[in-house]
Length: 502
Ligand SMILES: *[C@@H]1O[C@H](CO)[C@@H](O)[C@H](O)[C@H]1NC(C)=O
Ligand SMILES: *[C@@H]1O[C@H](CO)[C@@H](O)[C@H](O)[C@H]1NC(C)=O
Ligand SMILES: *[C@@H]1O[C@H](CO)[C@@H](O)[C@H](O)[C@H]1NC(C)=O
Ligand SMILES: *[C@@H]1O[C@H](CO)[C@@H](O)[C@H](O)[C@H]1NC(C)=O
Ligand SMILES: *[C@@H]1O[C@H](CO)[C@@H](O)[C@H](O)[C@H]1NC(C)=O
Ligand SMILES: *[C@@H]1O[C@H](CO)[C@@H](O)[C@H](O)[C@H]1NC(C)=O
Image (tube, rainbow, N blue to C red; front, side):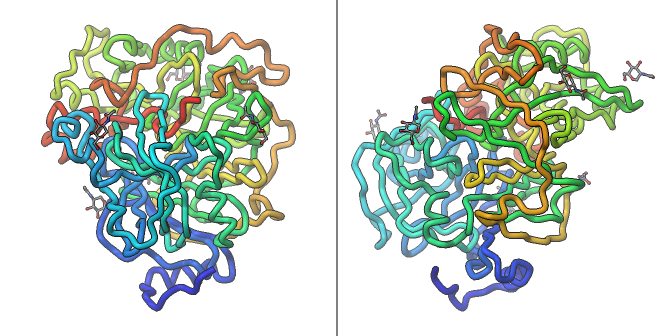
């Protein structure tokens, strides 16, 4: 562990006091502005701000790579396990036509300007995500600084070819790295270099209208959630290995303004908590029950969207979608209607979307889409949740997020403590995963057979289809009109970016 330099700014000093004598690394996600990284190392937790205003989908952490430090913005992705950055010579960053299609090259790294850069193996880096996007290049090593934590000699992909316009910060299990030769990934090094006590972090995306969220490495912040933080077990893959943040979604209900609860689940489903995905993807059978109840029109095989009347935003302001995990005493996260009913269709129409004829006029899109093979809870869900990812103890802590919270009380997570102050769920429902290695339908102990997930509805790629998912709130309004139609791909939502195709 290195001693922090004298460059301590006021906010850092304040944060360090809060987390005194702990090893927790808070990292805030925010928009890229040139500034010194926070120095929290002695505290043992590292907080990194996350920005959601760079493109339509995704939360970005501004980190630095190399010596001297080069600033890069990386999509924070709990669905994958490799960190990779764009080379300044990458094809995408050199090609106007590629940028017109995939979005502007956000920020790059020039290895020739770093004294701490070394090559691990040439041309061995290759990653492909479920939405068809990907990147290829070399595996390299260099220093990466995030939230004031300096990670030495981190193995990363250096993309020479990419169809994604920024690098990714994959923070999943090392077992899931894309390399044919396994290597210690960023979570391993965080712990090996004694920066944090256990491989754990907490994700707080905050309100849709908030510009920044936070990821806190090594700890959790008790002021950022409401009520009890409850833990559920991470589900192993079919080989018994821990490779993704899969948990059992045991129940999905809605609570109407008048208090009426409607249950849309028949069986537990294995879902991945994936910050690299914009929307939420559930088994078609569950999704269809919800579409019927809400008079929504599924046009995912056409324009790629599910349409719903915007009247729900005005007439059902308190309606929530209630996600429960792990069983009947498991944590519940209530997602407000305006996370699920997205008023973004007019923007798409201006960009050339041809909306089919619909039984309602005031057209919104539904942030819940049907899927036949993998079920993902993306940012539309995650913004309402406070999620603690404990890779060491194979647990996920979940609670309702305390949106717009300005207070902070950071608690360290250790190997022995597990997730502190959290209540375990007594009767845990378990779910199994499908042969793809990605989670499929759950068998849900005692909750019936797996009828879900057999549908043939195709989920099209968000990175290549203009009509795809985008969280309305994630798209900064003033920017919208300035966007060229050609830039849609780079500005729309992400789906499973960072979820590696095995
Ligand atoms: C994004 O938000 C950050 C932090 O609020 C701000 O400094 C930055 O200028 C914004 N960037 C864009 C492109 O709007
Ligand atoms: C990869 O990028 C290089 C330029 O960096 C380009 O010459 C090459 O054609 C690209 N390869 C592929 C397969 O696109
Ligand atoms: C599961 O983990 C074991 C032990 O780490 C490893 O040998 C095996 O290859 C893994 N299986 C798969 C399918 O990844
Ligand atoms: C509550 O509202 C829902 C729809 O908003 C309606 O279907 C239901 O009949 C209402 N129930 C009561 C008891 O008013
Ligand atoms: C919804 O139904 C499922 C399956 O019958 C059940 O396991 C779950 O507990 C129910 N949810 C609620 C909130 O009652
Ligand atoms: C959070 O603050 C934003 C304004 O910054 C506001 O639009 C939003 O409604 C607030 N959310 C909550 C849940 O209070």
